[in-house]
Image (tube, rainbow over all chains, first blue to last red; front, side, top):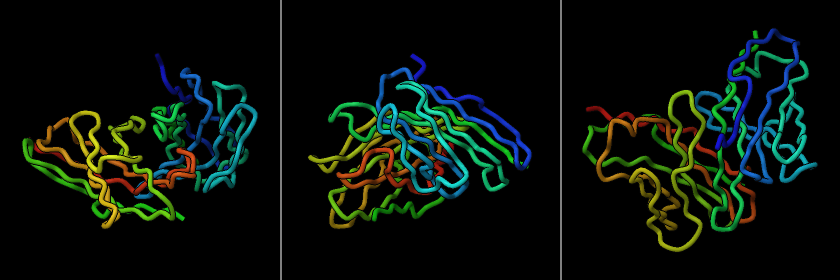
Length: 115
Length: 115
């Protein structure tokens, strides 16, 4: 059982380049999320998807787009990367059911450097 | 609005001693509170949560947390620390009407347990 899988694990981009971070979960969860983690700033929500076909902005959506391709996959795209987007990106999905409410499963992260 | 504070960037304890990692919160409604742990180069892992009921919540790896409504705190505790407990710990909060992925995370506390 792989849980939440993110690719790539590491990426170096030049300013202005584009790329897509991929995320897939095999737990049949409806809700999925993208966060960025910066030193001393905790996790900040970029975008989320409550179900297949829906997406909504989080706290820091500027410079990003997302696609909920199907129930399993939720991708994050940087159209024109900027140095300020250097960060560690985490994808997460939410466990279903009232008993498990609030429990998030995280991928191992994608470390992005923009030069 | 919701917020969470982890007042200590770093906590150091000796193996075998009790440990406490502090968290205080602010929400407009009833709080849902969570602790996550992050080991180096890994994603966050769910430890425990308070939704309702007993103020003392028990979670994974022998950790527990005490919900104190009057002090708006949710401190993480363990009676006897292990070197393997060394990691980054995050407290998170949301009110009962917000979905899990829109929780607000603290900035994290690095726990170091020395042999």
